[in-house]
Length: 283
Image (cartoon, rainbow, N blue to C red; front, side, top):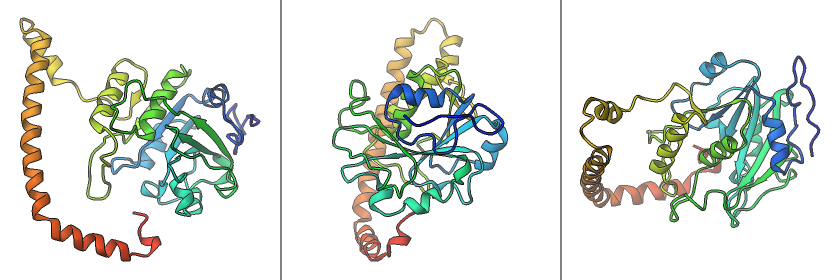
């Protein structure tokens, strides 16, 4: 287990504290030192300066993989980087981007890398493969198997949010930028079930297990049920399901038309993407 000491001016973990950690009780001891743990998604909606201003100095900010998506300068607060394995290992390792990522974390406030996996096919990497960055490991293979849709894979942020909530930490777990919204800059990868994750996370937020930065939008259907108490909630749910199913079917039909119309454009785009130098593929 890594030595978790007191940071200057407080009882917080020291820089590099994750080195050698691999057991849940060790991770819990580290996370329990913080009053707030903010999970920062790689999203257009993330305002790093705003987050830093809103949360106190005893806050741990947790980032994921390619942090150059949300950071354009060194991050001044306590930080932890989560890097998930794949069949080939962490993508920042096999794409040789470790240096491009960790440069955003000054060594004095950087706890290190938490290397995780969520299924047995995913490979964990050594600290040496992370260019000797302090590294701890968390094996969560099978963690989401009992409830996550079988044909999809959970995102790292979703799994870590649930795992942290299971630890019953004294501090607050905050999700920042977990919107699952497609934008011109960031794509929403179809291998994950974004709808399922959003429903699950919002339920957890309403139960008080986690907190969502900026709050939760009021549920209009709950207000509808309150206004018309004679309508059973099961009937409201069935009506919602019917409408969503019909709208999704109509949307899929239009998407199919667009896919057919854009085949040639996609072929051209894929051709030029294959010609790009490696340093242009990061975004």
